[in-house]
Every structure is written in C-alpha cells, then in structure tokens.
Amino acid sequence: MTDLFSPSEPEAMAKSRPLADRLRPQRLADVVGQDHLTGADGALTRMIEAGSLGSMIFWGPPGTGKTTVARLLSGETGLVFEQISAIFSGVGDLKKVFEAARMRRMSGRQTLLFVDEIHRFNRAQQDSFLPVMEDGTIVLVGATTENPSFELNAALLSRARVLTFHSHTEASLSELLTRAEAVEARPLPLDAEARASLIRMADGDGRAILTLAEEVWRAARKGEVFDAAAVQEVVQRRAPIYDKSQDGHYNLISALHKSVRGSDPDAALYYLCRMLDAGESPLFLARRLVRMAVEDIGLADPQALAVCTAAKDAYDFLGSPEGELALAEACVYLATAPKSNAVYTAYKAAVRAAKEHGSLLPPKHILNAPTKLMKGEGYGDGYRYDHDQPDAFSGQDYFPEKMGRQTFYDPPERGFEREIRKRLDWWGKLRKERG
Image 1 (tube, rainbow, N blue to C red):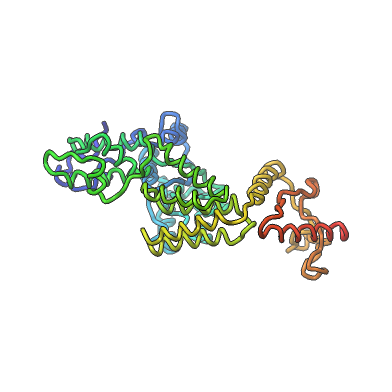
Image 2 (cartoon, rainbow, N blue to C red):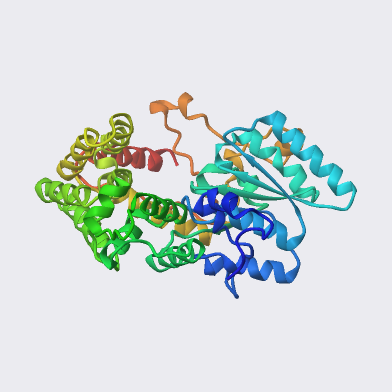
C-alpha cells in the first residue's frame, strides 16, 4: 500500500491529522470507487497516457474524491495546482489567479486551476474563465454537486468535458474502512452487523465513512465491541433499515411513487413515514416528491410543484422532526391531486425531436435583425407582434420550415389542464382561420 504520509513527518503529528487526510491517495490508481475515471481503462487514465489534459467539470455528490482527483491530476501531469472556492472568491481573486497563471505560462509552466463549487459563480464570473481557457493559460477543473447543464454557462460547458463521479458503493466504502484499519493498525471495534450499519450511515460519502470510523475509535473503551444499536448511539446517526443490496431502498421509494401516482394518500403516507423511520434522508424524499409533482401531476395542478418546493424549504427551516410534517403534507397533496403526465410525455417527445432536427434554423420571420445586413437577408420580415393582434394571437408558425408544425403537448380533460385544453383548441381554431 502507498505510504500515506511523509517518512520525515513525526508520527504524533501524522496521527493528529484527520483520518480522511491521512488516507488521501498519492496516485490516481489508488483512488477508490471511481474506476470508470481512474481505473486502468478510466477516462482520466487515458487522458494522462495520451499526454493531453483538457478542461473538465467534475460532477458528483460530496465525498466522492473530486478535490483529491484534481490534485493527483496536477501531480501526474506536472501542472501547477491552484485551488479556489467559488463560495469565498470574487472577481478580484479571479484576476489575481489568472495573472499568476499568465506569469507561470511565460516561464513555460501551465496551471491546473481547481474551482470548488463552481456553480456558485454567477454567469459573468463564469464567462471570465473563457479567455484563459482558450489561450491555454489554465486547465480548468471545476467541481460541482449540481447538474452542470442547469448551473453552468453553455459557453463554459462547450469548452470543458463533464465527468461524473459516482456515490460510493458498499464495497468501496468497505475498502476505505479496511484501509483505515491498516493505517490505524487496529480493527474497528464493531461486530459484522454494526460494520454494515456504519457503511449505510455514510450514504455513499467516502469522507463521511472515515469521519464515522474516527468517532467509533474515540468512543470505544478497551476491549469494547459495538453492535448495530450501540454504534448508532455512539455516532448519533441512524442507518436506513434496508437490506445490504439496497433493494429495500429502491423498493420503498418505488412503492411511495406508485402510491402517489395511484391517488392513494394513505398508502403514500405509510411509505413516506416508513422511510423516515428507517433513517432515510428527508431531503432525498423532498427531491422525490418534487419529481412526482412534475412527472405525475404536472399542469393538472400547477400548485403541486410549488407545494413540494415549499415543503422542502419548510423542512430546511424547521429541521427534524418538525419539518417532516411539511413533507407529509406535500405527499398527501400530491396523492389527492388530479394526475397528468402530459408535460412529461411532451418533454420526452420534444427531446427526441430536438436531437433529430437539431441543425435546423428557426424561421427568419421570428429572428431579430440588429444589423442592416441581417435585415437585408430577410431577418424579422413578416413577424407580427402578438400583442397587437386580435385576441393577442397572430397564429404564425414558429417551427423550422423544413420541420413543419409538431404536436408534443396533449393535455387531458382533467384538473387545470381542462382549461389549458380549451385555450389550445381556441388558438388552433384561430391559427387555421388566420393562416
């Protein structure tokens, strides 16, 4: 196993460092749980072998090794490692970092700039990276827990490859515990059931499992071995009561979702409470309720999404257990709301159409013509401003001409979508009349 701290470092000083820091890998190949990136055939391994490293966005949950991998990349490619956090940095800090990188480049050294929480930068700040990425001043490695497609500029994404980091599995968390025991030169004082419970408590977070292990070692008296119940008391955290394969987790969330979709508030509330009692993350359940609102209720009740996001905010404000009542309210609201997957179906159809016809230009009459040249090319010709038309409706076509009109959204005669159906039918009638 790779030596985890310098031989010259005093042993007492080394042991005073957090376990997660002492276990930080020294080579890319030592990274646990991200074989699709750092394994023998991993994407990053291949980049290093090719001798070419481009800008990247690391997307994944906390504790999956994004910062560690960025450091290792700089070491294995000879780039100077520079790290900033979008939470604590502003425009002035970025200018200083860019200027230092330019000075290094003049002396023949390139900079790997690691930006933690990059999605926290606003659009203008994100744009400031573009020139230094394009001229090779920096290789940008941004880390985010949020979906880059929603949180990052398209211009930035077009210049960086998105690499996904996966949550740790039970196997990779178990390997981290084994490595921790080797570094500590002592086993964790846990029986088999307690060890499995500790792994589930970490919820896929490698940093969390090592922090929990430290808590266990601190709490154990000489010769003491904790069982599952005792370890929960020691670390003050509950483990979800699911089977080892996590099938129970997915079975229960599936049962909750289908109970909501089936308009059974009693069953839905039962599965929600069962998962909360098992120690499931309330914010995970809040996210699933939001998904149910947009997938199964949609515009049949436009308030469903607002109720779910408000429930999430209420939980953030109140905490547990008081905030759990807000999740229960949202759950019952969804189960008793009118159901429609029309928007969900329309979205999937539109995605397919976008991929098939993604190269077609919009019709010229709906494009702006800010220059004389564009006006001469016919941009904006024939456009009718809807607010100036009878009923505020012009009836023009907006799809690319080669594509023709398409119908993706087909609202049912249920809930609020009954009203939307009336509007669409009325506009369809006017469109035919006005051509």
